[in-house]
Amino acid sequence: MNVAYWIVAGLLALFYLYGGGVKVVQSRERLRPMMAWVDSTPMPAVRAIGVVEVLGALGLVLPPLTGVLPWLALAAAIGFVVLQVGATGVHLRLGDRQVALNITLFVTAIVAAGLATTWL
Image (cartoon, rainbow, N blue to C red; front, side):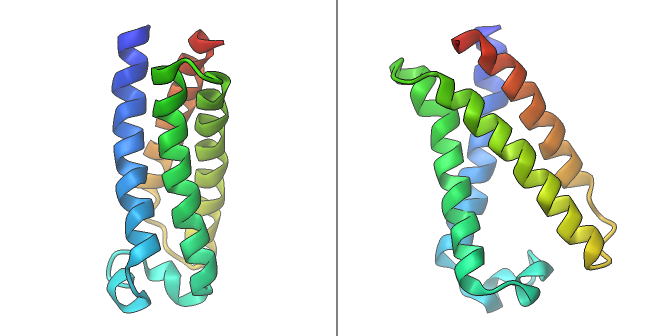
């Protein structure tokens, strides 16, 4: 169970660390080819989503690694589930039917949440 958590959470954390970091530092013009939704979202909100993703990625890894407040790993995984529900809704509202990545991240976050219960 421990190895499974680290594989799933590690991959999820890497994805969100990269994706969140890009949202925090890139301009709207640089984000547009990767994320068409940035045109309909204020940049402070895009930056805030990026910060939440980076913090969530750290929350998946640091608490179990250090043993300090390990329940935060579960909270981070649940946060990513909620994030993907919202992200899928945004894509569908904007007419973007390519939500396979969102669904994959949703399922992966659910698995990470289930595995994170071992830290409780």
